[in-house]
Length: 386
Image (cartoon, rainbow, N blue to C red; front, side):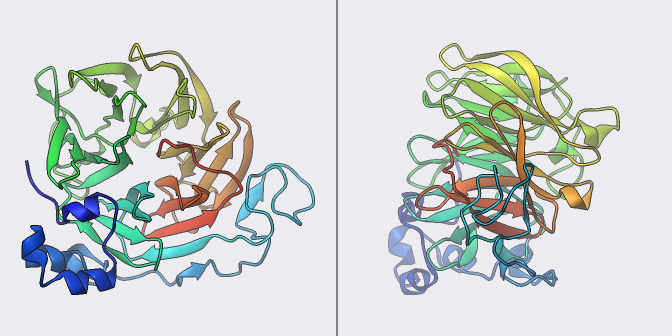
């Protein structure tokens, strides 16, 4: 086990604001946090170990040119936009896409902790997890190094679940701050590079394992894959046994479940490996009790050369997914009905990797867009499962 650069109070969801960190520096030894950890947790979040990096020209706040209704919200249905895009679940009247933090090399894996009113997300090449405090907009380093963490989620006991590239593992941050390895091998061989995860109500952890994190040294450590396939796995909540649930993906990526836990959604970003490979979201019938999935079908095709590698559901079963890497006009977020009908898009001026609902009412959509973190209020609530 190793310990992160946070104390147990922070893990319990209280969060450490800027003033709290300054006042708590003297008492760091008493709480088990070293002075080095306290310093690391309060650095300005620009660049590896705090070294400045070039920021993009866009300022923080509403995107340039925004006015109500915000043109960055595009509905697939036509009609008067007086109270927001027709048919698209956007906040009525006064809402806009905001850039709330910047200075990252590749933002990914957002997850919201309601108890502390903060969002955690990965900055993969900088080998750190960031924390955005919703109460005052302060962004700080939560953990560094993070083993090139990618996807994050939260279990039903409020613990952080993290997929690590260079660790080639899935871990859980316990309430005392220690780290438990959940999965790092299958059939005695190392996993590829776990990418994203979701936790069902029974405590089972479902995660995807493509090979992106071992393809080079920028987002992990270059290595040869030991698994014959790039699978989706399930970790049994009682025995800890790791089993393959789907083995026919090219590159399984973002993963989530429907609010009723009857559907499993997984992105396939295989297009990155070749033009004939898929760029879509697949949906499965989910048997939580049996730990199985069935009846695979394509839920939504993403127009190539763009791909989607992050997905979430709202309480009504609508599916929200990230889009990027290809056509700049597609950069952003797509929203679909549970039947796969496109409702609308949120346009972001950068490639979008992942997203998560947050806020006290779970109606604020946080969007990881390459170098920046964006947020927009919606007229729906995110499902309880992050």
